[in-house]
Image (cartoon, rainbow, N blue to C red; front, side):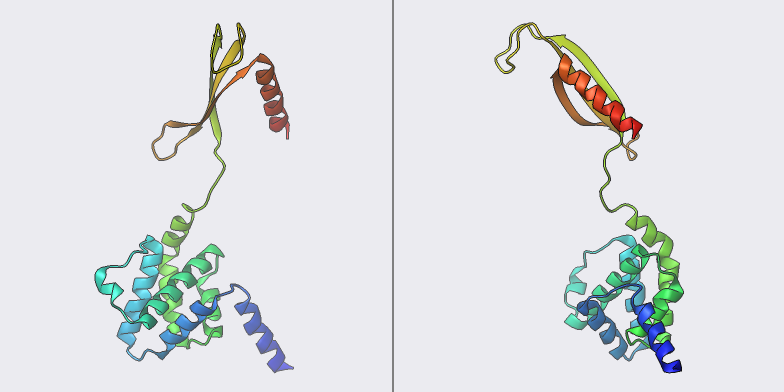
Length: 198
């Protein structure tokens, strides 16, 4: 009965994050390295690379043997996935241990992860896509006397510009610019009011 609870504990830790076969192989290659100083440097470099977002290697790094590239890939993937899933250093340590790394290596990885976690989270917060937030709407009314491109004559037209706030520059950016007539403007206003209510 006790054996079953140990296995379920390992499986629940493994289920915290799912790692690809390549990441699993890279972790296994790390386990095969003998030199502790080299292992520590690889762990530090990989986690620093993940935290800095520096995924482009130098010319000397390109000549590394494939297993070193796989180890680096595995460690970068591991810490990014762990940070994305808000794993604590202890949860990461247990997860890595469940994939076959010894306590010493698991401890080194979890310690470096804990040190780099604020930078990792900061970096992860800059990725992804969010819908623009409409911060301002400018409009200008004009009257179409005659136009070859617009099939109107003597109709009032509204030129609308929707803008959002750019956090990096502190200014505003135009999201979209369009022209509409009075009926289309009334329909737009009604839809915006409906969106605001919900």
